[in-house]
Image (tube, rainbow, N blue to C red):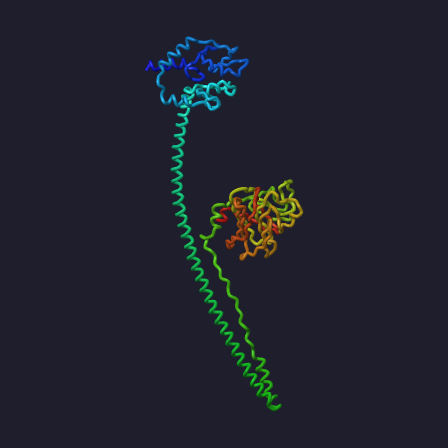
Length: 473
């Protein structure tokens, strides 16, 4: 083994660093390194002032090299002792630089590129860290060992995550299956409820039909009897009409009396009842809204008109005739008797309730920061407004939705308590009549900024009250 190593060392010393073959006409330059005369001549061919050693980059002052006959003799001896190269070495020697057609023997750490001797001598890699192939390969093998260890950990981690995601998929299927069963069950209950309601309503309608038909028949009998009486009276009158004057006048009193006492029956008219039903509480989506999204809204006195009086708990506001001496606030309403909630909302879902009772005029809803506070147009709140989404009462019987568009409302039941559901994610605000739990109106718009709970009291002294969480439970 030592002999083989020695022979390899001898061969290395007898090889040219440029062509990596045995030295041909070996020469020595100023730094002491040896090359084939043709190789070093070709390497220095285009150089004029400074002649760099291809191995150590020492700058020789002149193009000068000394013939080394002794090294030439050793080279001839090394040729005789040449060992068969391994297949791997032959393959490595076949890797040549495409640019210079020289064997690749160096590795640039800066550019992570394999170099030949001429590439290494070029200005492109002059100040770079250049290693031999063996040293670079050893370094990067150790470096890759760390990467491999790290990647193995990553693979194990992601395999665990993949397993967890697979379990989540199975869990999702189970939950969806369970939810489907719940939905089917709820809709089956609802179908049975609606079927029972339908049968009840149809039965009531049939009963009403029979009752109305009986009254129609009774009325028809009265008209038939009346017609018979008229026919009999007509025949009697015609018979006495042709009698003598004395006989006619003798019975005239009786004829007039019978005519006056003959009463015509009233024609019978009817209007069928309107049949309807209310869903039971378990089928009302409003209950889920109240439970999940109810917020505790309080009033902001700093925004209240100077004739509005806010209670200590900031839950109630009423209009008074006395103008209060309050500090100036750019957020205060000056011409419109209105006040805002203390908290603005710009995400999520919120629900709150307002008790309006029998107030003749009011508006509740939400507004953004663009709603004017001081303009004279603010003195006309029952109109189309930008920056406001609300509903209100403008007289004893007129209800209205006002905002970017205006709509008249016709609630079946007069509302005394209003529920407001703000869905910022869907850009919707909905208003509910809590007296019959019906939907009064929904605005679909595009909300871009903060939204504040809005309360307009009108000019009557009856209060508006924000219901607390316990009031609605």
